[in-house]
Image (cartoon, rainbow, N blue to C red; front, side):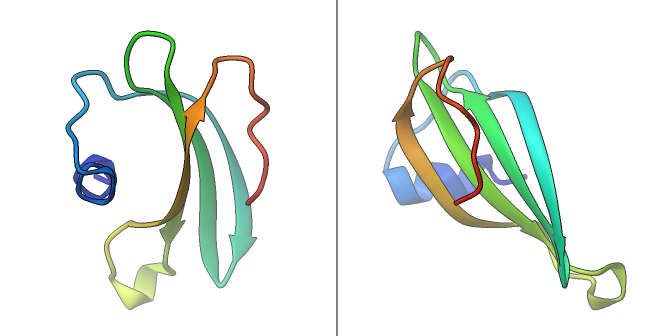
Length: 77
């Protein structure tokens, strides 16, 4: 659900977009930190926010870090 949001911010499309790891942080909703393989040896780390169920809002890409590798640690940002 957040792939189009990242593609818009990066100004490019990703043929490969596979989540390989994630962490969650509970706030007034949930922040998900997700390592995504986007092709070749390139990875992107995403911060995705899911609001509380009663707010009925879509998943939102709140931040990302590009130019990551498979071995870069997935950390809160």
